[in-house]
Image (cartoon, rainbow over all chains, first blue to last red; front, side, top):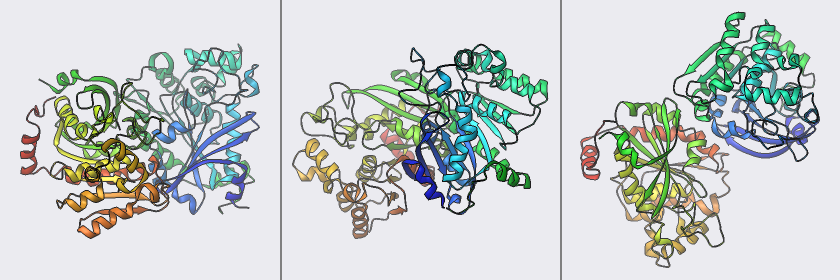
Length: 309
Length: 309
């Protein structure tokens, strides 16, 4: 069965040629999240010939799968390096998905924090961690010419937190991780305390499972890691706390490339300015296909139908 | 007086560092359009050191000054070549500006067609031609380190029509012109007939003043000209009519580079894919500073305060 046939299980929302490849958008029923989900995937031109590695982009608060697709200009570098970019949504969606009771933008819809909620009513839908790590790779491997064993993670703000925590919890599953303006220590900032309190309850041991600085101290497996942070970012001091990430890396000896970028803010203009460097960083790790990677492929995705399309 | 002081006459809406330069957005009272107008300008890093040439980008139906800024990814090339990009809005704006009586998106607000309307009630505000050619360059030369004597034009769809017609009417004022998916012959398509009928009335001689194929036949002065058109563009046959532009150029001997791009549609994903080539094309013409250009500078803009900022 070809990838195109497998894709019939998905509903295509749009398809636009872009830099010789295809910018695609789909919806699909998600058993993990118990709702219909939308994602975007950019297939570079190389995907016409063979399966390509995957960079997952996790967006920030209030975003959907579309912000990065429209604003980052990443398709250019993805086409150059032959990497697919997968953009999931930032939370479960739909009229029966619980939201912040006051409609705040920093919690609930658009603010899933890439974790598995354990508290009612959130646990019914808010399982973005499982969706990103397990369900979405299976959907992608069935429907597209993607080598999901070669995967890396990147993201912005809340999505930078998502990329770093998911990578740290699965250092052999992903080849590299990067982040723009990540929420580095959610246990120590207002966004994170609010979200974790609702989604995870009061047990701080569960909070530590989704906090980059805590995971760094617990997990000795090194993964290539890069962070860019604008020093004119209005969220830096109160919410992002890059200095706590730097300190955790220093104290544990975890190698990381943190760059403070002078004059840049929290916007997509910052992301656009440096996304080419991030994609080049990931390409270096994604395109080194070793025996271990092939083995991992066989273990992770036994349904992968090969390179036909 | 520095440029920064002159800029006080403008209201800054936003400023974001981008590719080492500044993506800026301003509003200002426009005597030409008899309303308040918003524009965006990207200043490349070179503008910190000396005045830079200008590429005007004219957007299409329903757009504002923001679409190109957010979606085209053009700042990267503009920074590389040291070119400012100015994005005006697509029509006059405000509660007292007449709009399509049925609120249609192809006429009125967001659809100024870059002409001077002669018919009531449109003539009170809809004078986008004068705004782009005369008022905006004066505002820019006063407020920013721009060498407005070195200017080129580009645009998309209705804005491609605007770029081509303005360039053809002022071939010594602009160095080069390009367009994506332009409305090539508005006198012969539904969008153009509706807009010209309302804005200009029934006198077809006035219509010819704003129709690229007619201007080409009347104007023998050659300007470097490039057009990209996607062959999967749903508007191609009924509204854009690239073949009429190609025929007019063939019959008049006007040199033009028209490229039909296989599989591309009318979206910004198409523009993003080829904007780098357009900016490189314009850079070649904008950066050749000759004696004639300096003379033109003195004639056109006697108030230009030099290179200080």
